[in-house]
Image 1 (cartoon, one colour):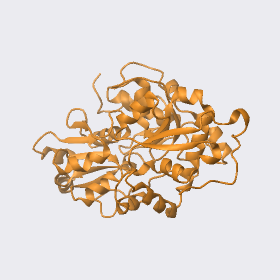
Image 2 (image 1 turned 90 degrees about the vertical axis):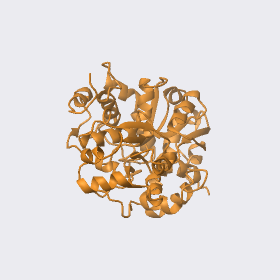
Image 3 (image 1 turned 135 degrees about the vertical axis):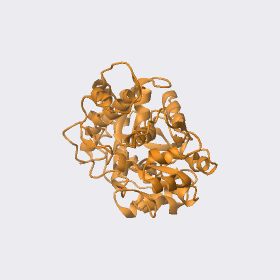
Image 4 (image 1 turned 60 degrees about the vertical axis):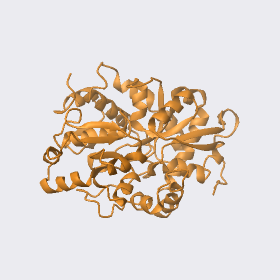
Length: 389
């Protein structure tokens, strides 16, 4: 299935034409890879002079390694992965670029049936964990990724120290429910459809959505190495425009149902469409969530997609909070170098998509603390629960 617009891109002529026209785009099998899948299936790259090849990856570590080796040109990836590589935390360092934000919300934390029942019974996570026969084990998807940080933030907001009182392990998202079923985990934080899969298999219950932790939080981004954006700026802009159009297409419920069918194919997630579609449309069924989740957002008239510097700075603040970033650095300068706000403005403006004037936004998280996108180090040091030193 393909689609191409009759309107030509304003960037196809002369020196504005894409320098590289065949682009390999990596993704991990998750519901929120929908924008890159739609960009391919609807052939939104064609009118911008590019052809997209989707390259499924087994894990976020594989995404990182193939971005760095040049085997893929860009990727649907964790916001935090980009900043972790930029800083060389726990692996190779390379200068990275965030071209746009792909999604907000849509992640969750699922607990084993036993722990979920205990939490409902006592109403307090700390007390529920004290009933466990061993040190609780929680899984996330990448050490510097979004899921690790949502998990840590949620635990700390419940007065549980994530570095001392639980054991955190890394597992690729498709393996989470299997590990829960085997009794190896007490809970996990990841994206969909893997929470829906765990509930369908009756091995766990989704207890908190990531939008309760941070309403309309940044989640996945379209990212590449910074030298790719520098060497092929027209290609990077064309890719951003194609994926932006895909995000816009995903605004309608009818289109999301169509996308759910594509996402369910073996080449994307291989999960049943009836487990993908409901949560893609905001329906969490009978999950014992404390608050109704905010919907997985891809566009919202462009409000989702701008690469706010404050979003990048938040991840840097949490690296400092959890002892991953100990030396003083110019955090604002790092965010300004990584997040390609000028390139995004060009791409969005050419499509007639509104672009915010400000490069920061403010939010209130689950613990009641405000994040305003400034003084990241002081913000990190203000938390009562954090790494020592």
